[in-house]
Image (cartoon, rainbow, N blue to C red; front, side, top):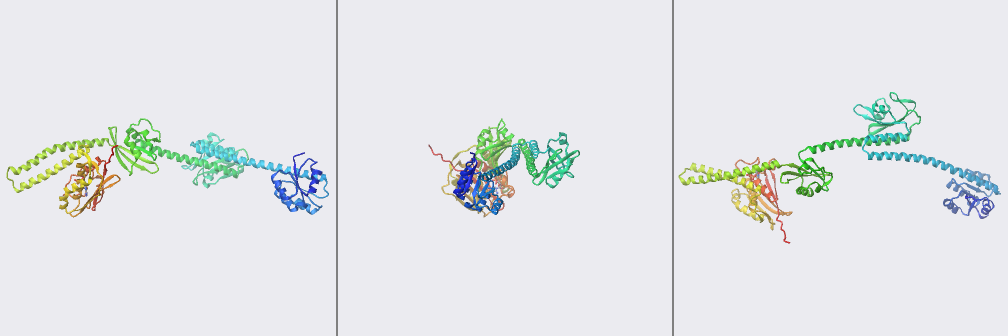
Amino acid sequence: MNNTTLLIIANKQTGDLLERGVLAPAGYQVTQVGEFIAAKAMIRSSSVDLVIVESELVGFRSAIELTETFPALPLILIASADERQLELNALRAGISDFLSPPLKPDAILDAVQRGLQRRERIQNWVKDRTRRNTDILRRRVNVLETLGNVGRSLTASLDLEEILKIVVDTAVEITGAEEGSLLILDEATGELYMRAARNLKDDLVSTFRIPISDTLAGEVVRTGKPVLLDEKSPQKIKTSYLVTNLLYVPLKVKDRVIGVLGVDNRQQQSSFHGQHITMVSALADYASIAIENARLFESTEVERKKLESILTRIEDGVIVVDADGQVILANRMACAMFKIPKQLKYPCPAAECFSHDQLLALIKDGHETFPYRTELEIDGESVVNAQLNTIPGVGMTITLHDITYFKELDRIKSDFVSTVSHDLRSPLTAILGYVELLERVGPINERQRNFIQRVQTSVRNITELINDLLDLGRIEAGFNERKVSLSIGNLIQFSLENLKGRLLEKELTLEVNIMPHLPNIFGDSVRLRQVIDNLLGNAIRYTPQGGKISISAKEENEQVLLCVLDNGCGIPAADRPHIFEKFYRASNVVENISGSGLGLAIVKSIVENHQGRVWVDSVEGEGSSFTVVLPIEQITTPH
Ligand code: ADP
């Protein structure tokens, strides 16, 4: 009994005759099916090696349909009569054998054997074909894998030499060539030189230089297209450098040819073909990417180094913080300012880099408006001016400028001014006293009285100036602060009461707008009264006869906003940044309006001593508005 399975599609009588009389005794496994559809399903689902079909049962058409559906399956057709034409048609249609009555056992067995042999031949042929196709596919997969590996090493390595070597080696291996080379275009000379090679002598590699005119490689550069050379007679690449087969493909960066990748044979005759062009071109693309990456990396590196050395050398401290509050850079000066001994590893959490509380708070909280400036005192030794700025996509920078020297200078100046002012006050009081006594000790004429009045006015002006200077000195030094809970509304009322005479004198319209239930602030009432007096005094002074001034106070975001507005002469834009400086007077001030230029400096110092801010908005010729912001009193509820 062998394992060969035969399927008989015939009526019962013929089937039994074939199975029992001939095929089973000969050792075949036989299955009988009396219906065409079931037979088809069986062929599909189980392994059937040969089919015997009785044409009377299924019909000639169906038998042909079977050979068409299963072309490798041998099919023997049993006809009901010996018909030459039917036999011919059956064989033409691909049916492997034809039997007609009377059915002789030998003829049946012969036909079965022939059919099985034919089936084996077909199977062997298919196997052979499949093996060959699989080999081709495997080779292609290998090439793809190799290309993939080159791609991976390209992304993994930044070493251009290594990558180009891999590219040339791979080009040689996948094309089976004898040699390979990678030529780069020297833009300065217009020549091609060799950057990497395989199986070429070192001295040839190092001295190889060819022009792009009249050379095969040059043609690739000029046209941007591959060159495939398959000549019977050897071609010259360079003097005494002859090849029999050659393939050159361009190295392109954005349509610009930057070099040539080539493989060649000097001895063997096996030629390169279209598929090699595709593969070597893929490698050339890798090489181009690597060269371009290296170029970009080099230029970014140069820029980075340049920036780094600028940052290191500048005498200002620079700290860069990312969006998560991690320090990503602190230059040499910043490290020196905050006495950081070790080299920091970035990114570094701010608290691990710095221990300065004020700086850490700045880094953590940032600020609402940028740029923001503040002063930081470091260990009671130095003072730095810190400027915060945002950098979109990066985070925030803090630039630090050492102002210890200026602070010291300022202090010396203030000390000097207050000492001098103090010493000047006594003689001035004496002058004023004696001038007042003059009239009492003897008669004086009208001219003398006029002169005495002028002396008195001048001495009073000087005394006022000296008082201002002394005040400023005390405010800056933080002396005499008596802070209590107070109402800004009340201070405004007192101040207006005092200035009523001057307002009437200039016929100014006054508007007062104080928000009801304005929260108290915690401050020095004498000093804050000085702020309001100065701002209102200026508004009156710099607004012409019949003008309009207004004062308002309201609460906003836990702060009291005090605003003094006038429609006076305004302040030129160029002067605006300086008017809070000591002794500064704007360029549009009319000569006869007296003033020392100290009022706003006093205002600024007082406001800052109360953790507040003051600023001005103005349009020259139209008016000014001074705004003071002071934090409201924080009521601490007892536990
Ligand atoms: P001064 O004694 O000169 O008024 P301040 O320090 O009070 O000194 O003011 C500085 C300068 O600011 C003034 O000289 C003037 O040029 C300008 N200024 C102040 N307030 C006003 C205002 N309300 N309108 C126009 N200019 C003003």
